[in-house]
Length: 188
Image 1 (cartoon, rainbow, N blue to C red):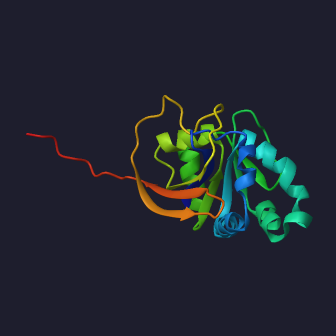
Image 2 (image 1 turned 90 degrees about the vertical axis):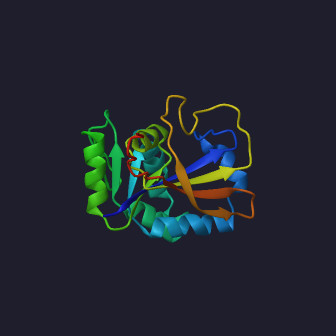
Image 3 (image 1 turned 180 degrees about the vertical axis):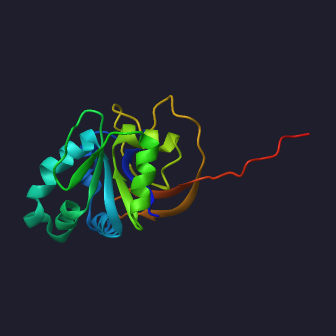
């Protein structure tokens, strides 16, 4: 069984959408880490908006981005959407019962299933306890406005820090695992 690994760019103030603000922090060591993550993955999991942006760009980037783009384009993709009927770019649409479908996807693979961005999908999967690893690329910038990583209505969850990576640009990656607490006996 594979793992659902969510990789998300986030600002100091928790903004995750439209990450154009990450550009100044992307450098060689950041690229090396991203390369490693992509090449151990067996598949990608995307929300519709992220899929539409990526599928419009990546198929045209093989010449400029080399083996990374080839790998990005060749991996199977699973697009969670209630509005798409079909998807191109080596993708299938996931539109059924979310928890059941994601468990089935995870069971198909032995390696990681990478979830890039896809804020609403990520929040839903965290709420359902289906994210096995959360890798937050925290960038030293305050954006001020935009979609937050977790909405105010997100349930309280606890995570264990499994590791950190500090990039020369000042960005830091937190590698987090959900705390899986054993059921406690009621107090007498």
